Image 1 (cartoon, helix red, strand yellow):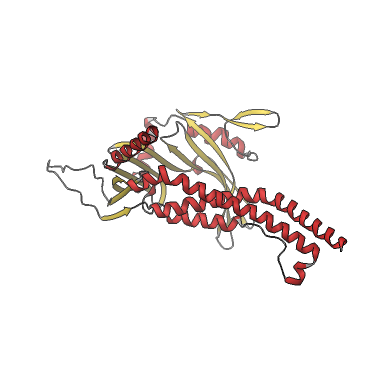
Image 2: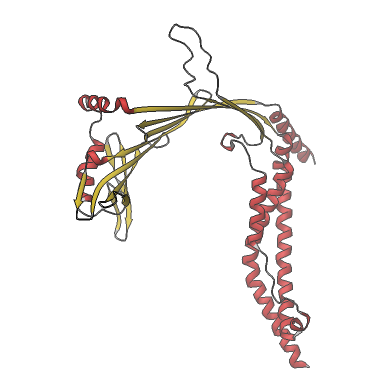
Length: 375
């Protein structure tokens, strides 16, 4: 008894300590897009937490027509082949992943209509200016390739290796090249920056924490027990169904001869309960077991620039501000747990009930037939 009381005392001390804790976290997401004319060529996103970078990602779009292109012409159309690329980089990976697509453009001479077709896509990984080979499992074992995916037909496969991959891995720090590219495109580039600051004030929900530790196991156990009872009931009902069919009672009384639980209905109910109990606003910033008050500020300028050219402080005013409250509910969570458990139990129960019910149905049918012969 003393051990049990000591355990409960520790639990309540733990809950009380959580309930007294509050925290404030500030997330800042900076999104940048670079356009050449009206065409998006680069975009990046950086997420910081309390001023420290949490993760970052970027995408760059390539048009390799200046690197390689091939045109064919006949009386009706012009067919033009080139490559395009999408480079993706993440702080969670130490390499750039680039999808390279072979594109075919068909120009109809009579109408001027241009149609485009993707002839296939290959993936390459580049780290420190070098190709990172990727492994491919085959019937003869594992092989390592420069580009993952189905090979292009010639001459495009050779163009990929000799032209495109060479371009991607050449030294991009070449001064002449950088200067030339800057002069040709500087006047046609436009940069768009969007900044979103999300301030999350979290306070532990004592009732929900207590439910998760003490109440949730009972909800799951009760729901599981009830569903197992239901599954056992189906076996008995199907035994009677088999008996009624063989004895002729089902046709005379319009009685059903087969019952099964509906996993589809239970799954839909569980999904609905889970959605109702979900975090509605900015779930990616939600701290478990807490209620959150969220303030969202959106800026159209770099909010780190807080000093003007004359040295005076400048206040950057957000262009939009929103506030939300995420409150977790014990009642909704209990319903979600029960519904989810019911769906799982129904799935397991259905798998068990089918062979059992078939057996009991056959048994009932056999007893019914036996009874008919005894009359």
